[in-house]
Structures are given as structure tokens and as C-alpha cells.
Image: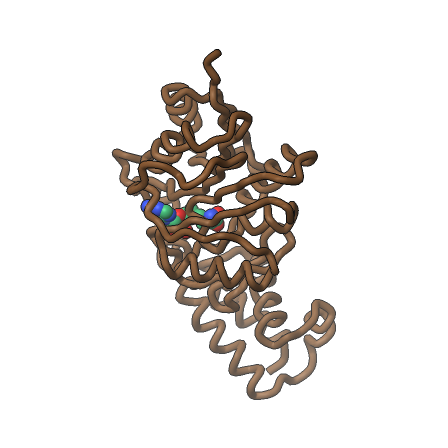
Length: 284
Ligand SMILES: C[S@@+](CC[C@H](N)C(=O)[O-])C[C@H]1O[C@@H](n2cnc3c(N)ncnc32)[C@H](O)[C@@H]1O
């Protein structure tokens, strides 16, 4: 078969799962990662007969994609803030809106070279490691309750040559954070069970539920805990950054006020409230 024939086959088999342009990108990602093709190979090689091995790889990938498995779990890689991260069934695939959070933090701290940072619920480590890569003099700690996710984050740190500390810990079981930090950042689980109906099948069936979902009746459980811990763990001018549930910005602001923080929420490029910044209101 030729690449052109595979393009048609992928469009036909994946039409119910993805829009046409996304199917095109998915096939390109498969060719680049699993056939080691360059972008220009993908553009130029569309008429040539493929080897049996290449055909087998594209057929196997299509089979997995048809089960709604995200392409990143098939290639084992995702790109985030200019870096390549290993992903697997224990880690969330890093999202574009999370890149916006990282970008905001880097811009806010352009002038500071030394900062003590903790990334709570680190998954692949994408937030903490991107901050470390942008600001190598910072000390970065990555925390997660999942042993497998934390091992993946450590291997990403090794690959990026960004040395970090890691802590395997259930944040909900902590009374204090181990150090004082200039930046505490978290993208914790925040999708309510009631929002499952909106979630694409490929996310629901493949990404770790531990990373995504919270109880409808206790949707802000992680934010409350992290704010409570941050009261004592933030350095005097320290900032707490969150990725937030787009449907709950008012509830988040109310929570921050209740716990003694001044806060601001920000929209992402899609116009959804997705980022939050909190600072302690210091009593004189
Ligand atoms: C929404 S994912 C975010 C992953 C990554 N930071 C990102 O932005 O792509 C939430 C992460 O929190 C972790 N997590 C869930 N419950 C936790 C807990 N009780 N304590 C610490 N981490 C937890 C999950 O394992 C997951 O890696």
C-alpha cells in the first residue's frame, strides 16, 4: 500500500472519532514517530509502495486508534512547551492549556533566577520540568500519589537533563509541605463526575481516572487542601498557581478568599477560565 491509500483508510476508519484534519495529523504523528519519517518524507512519500513492516505498523496503529486510544499513548510521546515527554497509561497527556499556565509563570518570574518550586500532582512532570528547563537555577520538587507517574516524571527529568527532587505522596494526607516555596503550582484532578458526558471517548477510556476525576459533591477538595497547606508553605511573596475547572471560577475565587488569599482567574486561548493565581493577604 502507499501512504495515499493509508490516508484514505485512516479517514474512513476514524471518521466517527476525529475531524478530518486531526486524522491527517494523527497519521503524520504515527509516521514520524513509528516509521522515523521526517515531515518532508510524509509530504513527499505518498505515492511510493511501503515495505511490509511499514504497512504492519500503520495497520496496527490504526487498530489501536479505532479503539479510541490517543495517538500519544501509541507513540509513547507528547510534546509540551517545546520538550518531548514520555507518556503512558499512568500519566495524563499534557494539554495545551497547561502550557499556557507554564508560560504565565515564566513570564511572571522573568527577573528571578533562583526560586524554590513545587509541582503537586505532577504526572509526566510537564509543569515542573518545563519550569526547570526555562530556569535552571531554580530548585524544583515534583509530587504525585502515583508511583508509576512519578517514575515517568523522573525518567522525563533524566531525559531532559533537568535534575529535580521527587516525592511520592498523597497530598490529601499531608499536614505540612516539606519546605517553603516561592512557587507552588498544581493542575490537580478537577473534572466532576457530572462532566463525564462531555468528555471525549478517547480521554474517558484511556487516560487515568485518578488524574482526572473528583466527586461531584467535593469538586474543590484538592484546591482546598493545597491552599490550606500553602498558607504556611509559601514564602512571603510566594505565588500559588492552579489550573482550574472552567465551570468553577467563582467557586475558586470564593474558596481563595475564605482561606485568606487574594486571587485572580485567567482565560485560556479558547476563552475558558482555566488559570488562577493566588497570593497570601499578609496581616500587618
Ligand atoms: C490533572 S493530572 C495533572 C498531571 C500534570 N501535572 C499535567 O498538568 O499534565 C493530576 C495528577 O495528580 C495526581 N494525583 C491524583 N490524586 C493525587 C493525590 N491525592 N495526591 C497527589 N497527587 C495526586 C495524579 O496521579 C495526576 O498525575
